[in-house]
Image (cartoon, rainbow, N blue to C red; front, top):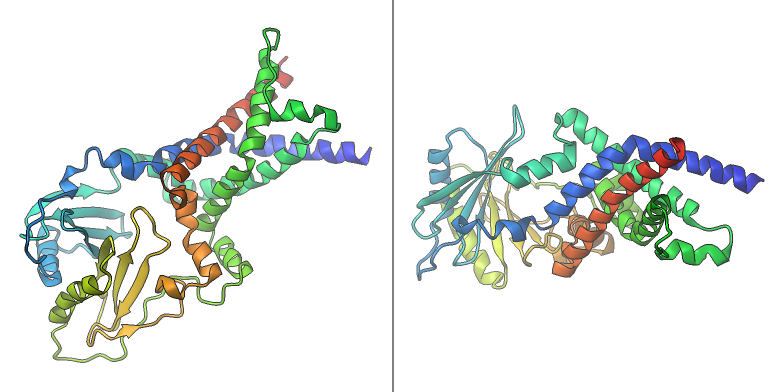
Length: 373
């Protein structure tokens, strides 16, 4: 009797959480499907990102900064990406306040010629991302709705698995496969779609939901890192210079930094240089070591007056210095979009997201069919 009452309570929790978060989960799952293959889809129409390679040195960081200031005066340069010989150089502008300004300016790395400027918040994938993270609503409202809906979806998965478990072992076969015939009614088919698909996608859904919560909640991120045994600061920290030295040509020092790193990191995919924000902050260079992956990047910090390399007490440093907890947390985004498993991993993430999107629909029809017979 107690088990029946408990299961009835769990069913009510599952029902009302599902009805209250269903639309949000559907939108987040569908937009997530499309975001997974952003890089691959964009490659079909982003020819402005490539150039004809020639036997010549890239323009210097100082020249890049000069061009960036000329093309977009009074805009903050977030970073400059120096890629492969056949890739355009990318200047990234980013400002969060008073309103978001996130654009990229692509240059010929040999001549400095401007190829194209792109608004990263616009276009198809800009639209998709806004839907995924905030439902196309104002940030203060939409992001909160998405974050807590995904957290509740995590509870939905757990309660769904409890409800899925049959009372009798002989009924287990009915819960793990579609056993339909010509006489099977649509209500039964819908029930099977909800329960069978829910069971097979539950593990992947938990991974997608968990990694989403890590990105959505600072407290969730911190607890996850510490639970894994992390002993560093999980935040991104920029170390300061050891001292401020006047009468030093810092532009000249920055100009030699990328060519020097290219000799040291010969297999790197690209180098993203971040100019110091002020006289006291250091230079950051993000070294991308793998195509389409973020977790194994090397984060290098240099004193802007001496180019001495600085070591932060943060998980965002050299990948070889990362421990188990550091690596898992740094893998979070790559796991979330399936990139950790290459193209196969992305296909799995795509299918899992698509199937998750079906659960609110079949769940709603299941409730509707029982309530309005």
